[in-house]
Image (cartoon, rainbow over all chains, first blue to last red; front, side, top):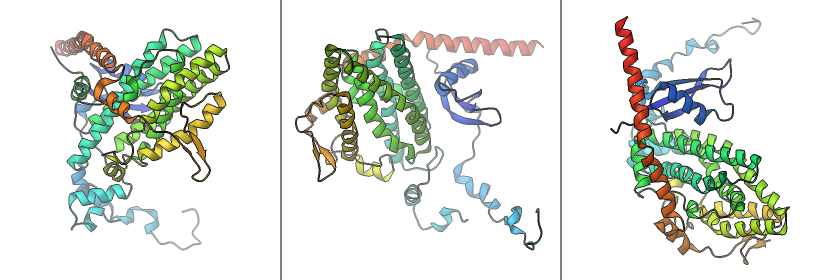
Length: 94
Length: 324
C-alpha cells in the first residue's frame, strides 16, 4: 500500500474577537490528525485559540484569469461609497 | 482605478508579469507565471525546506546529552522549530504544483541540494553554541530579505521563520558566552568550535558574486535582495564584535578592520572545500542522507497504518449514517 496523506488547509483564530485566518497547509491522514499537527506546526508560541482544518480538495477558488469579469464591475460603482454624495458643510453628524 | 492589464494590452504576459514584480506586487499560486519562475522557486524553496529538515540532524545529536534541563528544553524547541520551518516551506513549495512525495524523492535521491553546512559533524557541546550563533546568524542574514520576496506563499512562510529564528541565535550565543565565562577548558572548547564553524558559516552565504549563476535573475524576481558577497560582508561585520565580547579569536589571520571602506577585510575562503562538500564529499553527507532516508523508510508502516485507520473510521461513520 502506498497512499499519501492528503493535504489540509489550516485556519487559526489568534484570539477571540478575531476571525480565523489562513495560516498554511499540512499533510495528515484524517481531520483529527490534521488538528493535532496544526497545533504543533502553527501554534507553538500561543498564536491561536481555535483551529479549523479543511481538506484542500474541498476548497473552490476563483481563477485570477477571470478577475476582470468578477471584480471590475465594482470599480465603476462609486455611488456605493459615501463620498459620492455632495452635502453642504453645515450638515453635521452624517 | 483601472486594471493594470488593460493599460498594457500591447505587452506580453511575461512583460506584464515582470512589471507586476517591479511594482512590488505579490505573485499568488493561481496567477500566471513563466515556467522558469515556477522552476526556480520550486528549486530554491525546496532546497530551503530540505536544509531545515536535514539541519535537525546535527543538533538532534546533542539533545540527549545537553548539560542541563534548561539547555535541553531550549535545544528541543529549536529542533522542533526547524521541523516546523521545513513544513511551512514544503507547503509553500507545493502551491507551485509539485507534490510532497516528489520533493522528498528529490532530496532522498540526491537530486535536490540542502545547505552544505549540515554535512559537518557536531563533536562537542560547544558546537550547539557555534551553530546557533554562526549558522543561524548567517541564515537570518540570508532570510530576512526573503520576507519581501515576490512569491506570496514563500514570503509569508519566511515572515514566520524569521520571527522564530532570533531565539535560535540568542540561545546559541548564550551557550558560547557561558562556556567563555567558564573554566579554561570550556573556553577552549568554545574557541575550537568557532575555529571549525567560522569558514563553513562564511561559505553558507553562497559562492562569490562572480561565479554565482543565479544571482542576476534572482535579484530581478526579488528572490534575492542583496548579492552573496554583500551578505557575507554584512555577516562578518556584525559577527566580529560579537566574538570580541566572547573573548574569542576569529580563525582568520587576514581579518582586519578597514578604516577606508568601513568594513572588515578578510582572508581567502577555501572554495575547493565548499564544492567538495556540495558534491557530496563532506565529512557527514552520507551519514545525513542515511539518517534521513532511513527514517522515511522505517516510517512507511506508520504512515500506512494511519491511512488505514482513517479509512476505517470514515467507513464506520458512513455505515452508521446509512443504518439510521
